Image 1 (cartoon, rainbow, N blue to C red):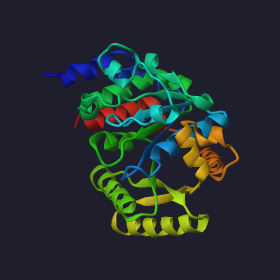
Image 2: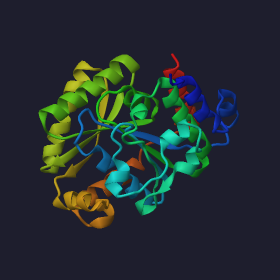
Image 3: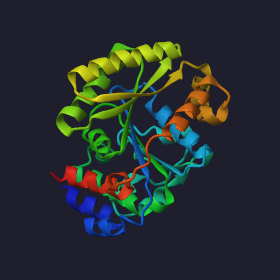
Image 4: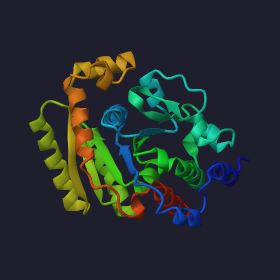
Length: 299
């Protein structure tokens, strides 16, 4: 029988900041790190495309960006980028590698933590193991400006965990009933059961800016009426053949066709993200992301 606790503790032991005492002592020494979780109710709506291209756009603006592929069952980031990765998060959990040792260089200056696609047990992590993975990030806080967590689709436990602990939650939708219904269900679970009350919405595969605005207004109105949450409009990604071509080539559109409409949309969102308030208290620090996740999962 697999010992979940031992595996989780091995992952945490690899990090030099495993206790709340150490986190507290380093609170004044660490710089703020934006922690952003990207989620969607339904798969196939462009969530990973957003995560990758937003990360590259932020890097091009001078940020030090780490992209974590947190889809433990169907990892997409390395496939989308054509990366051949030797190690991944399963090796961190097994104690074979430190988190820093599994990080790979991605395109556009970003760093990537590959997931473990096809590894069954990585799709069934315990709460402690999820906490162990994130706890290992504490040692990287001085090397980062932004951590983007690309989650699995749906409302699996790992998705909920990352959304609850992040500073910002971006929800990606497209204008089709299943996408809208599933995104609403995700927000309902997070708000009703875990008191996450603010979300940023991205409308993908949009016909026009006006179309996206109408979709946002309709979706936000329903959410805010029945769920007591606040939905901010983050941006839109237009339906763009250049984006589809880039996916086929396994090259991000922001690098493959940087003047395309979709690449411009990603850059606009990156610039907008930079105007969001920089974390000024403990909740904005990466190590407190770690601590929040661990405390919540241990209850």
